[in-house]
Length: 323
Image (cartoon, rainbow, N blue to C red; front, side, top):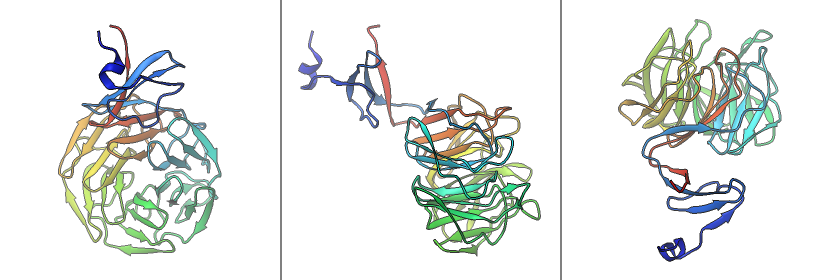
């Protein structure tokens, strides 16, 4: 029988931990687990267990990617300013927000994020905006319209879009654009709502679902205006989201009570894919349709659980056995 070296031309790599970003076809022996593993192509998307948060909570938000994420704010029974950073394996507490609040929104990367809006009994509905530089939060110019749980999109703390949310009246259509120093009102949403899933950039965003009451409405932003498009299969609010632009998005969890439903957007329609392992609402999220992160949220009580999404066509680690 041929050996692995005779077939591949190299020996099996020996490591103490699995490679962070394995490529399809890569094989290795993990000395810690005593198993032979390899990377193959995922034919369907799936959720797997990630590292638990240090502080269980709900009604907060996240920025960044699956292996480089930032979460901030929320409630643990009372409003919190806690910020945590994820490296793809574990969460680390870093410097707090300046203002504790829940139902906060934000977008950006792990080292360059903008957090805005939110609510606490102490200050009510707020327009406060804070900028994260990778080390600490700095308060910057307020939103023009104070609100909580708006949608958000953007890649860093100099280029962000905020849309919808709850204010006065209860739900608003207001959209604002952030240029790194100030907010400017631009064209409104077609449907006023808060708590929907949101993904994308300053010029290519998607807002889906939400509460006004609970809807499945989807709107697409082209950098100038919003266009109503195909609705989600399951109406809900408080869901997690991932995606790169208005043609690629993921919506998961949410609802009241708690959904595990995950849907994927291809630019024209929503398709139900693999469910979350833990049904939850008001969770934090980050990432894309190929690699997303779902953290915390409410399952009846505040959760610390994290799940990682691997989309179809992505490398997935498998353990080889002799059976």
